[in-house]
Length: 395
Image (cartoon, rainbow, N blue to C red; front, top):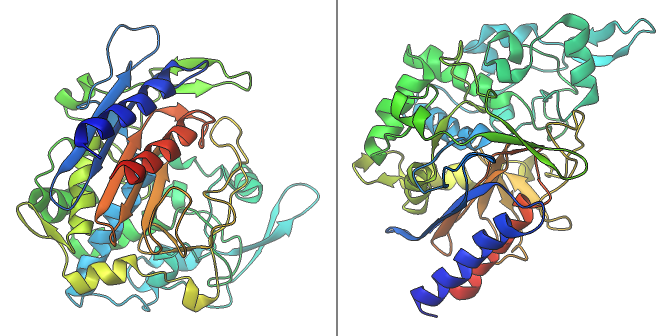
């Protein structure tokens, strides 16, 4: 298959995603091998109602695709011997020790809590096995936050991640604010804000510039507007929906803004066993550890999720029926996916419908970016699956 035919096929996926009835306002997608991007595409507009075409240098709220980058910063500390994954996380973030396990609510809505049966380890945080959740994926976390006046996670404050454990550490995989705590640990050990650590130890060796927790003036001019999709499918632009600038806390779980092109440099680093364009980020053996399914040895697996705030997330699951685990910090598929991804590959997503995958066996990865709420949008997510499938089909 020639590159020209692949480009035609992938361009068509993007065009259909924005052109079909109720389609996405705009999309940027890229695919890479170990050496360079072999596809870069954009379609649609940055904001409905404004005549500004989407292009490949558009800036997106990356949301939870931030997590893998914070995980790399933690693994750099592991490499240096500054901490171990089986250490109690409270040794580096003492506030974590105050968190309690939720047992239920009294008739008046007051939460009932108890101390956890064991301390949370760094490994628990990296694997989302600590018991910490998100308010938009857990009615109980939402109720607890409401009862105690704990702010939403998108406030980007430390108070927002000091919530409740939904179960004892190690009992289940529960997706939540764990990687924000990982970022906090990185900050304590480095003595710097997480954004500074990333800039020096991740962005510089990868040659990344258009990325950060705070938008530069140039990035702000190219920012894509988040849109809300109503139950009837209608899209409404939300131009004022931007994370606090600058944030009170650099949130390792969801806080970065950046271009798709910059994220591709990170994907290539993982495909190249830790080597970046301008220096090494991790040792090859650390990348192998990063990609290992840590849930398997705990007898746990990744399943679906139930949305508790309909405006932020639909309920869903990635590739239902495919056995899935978790690495540091992305989902792993324990068997090949219907889209063509090799077993043991890595992927994750961001709340406003950004998705990426990294297939280290095949040496291929990609990123699909839109800005739509709620999560797992009925148009954008299938577009991502079509895009990934077409990449494998035409290679």
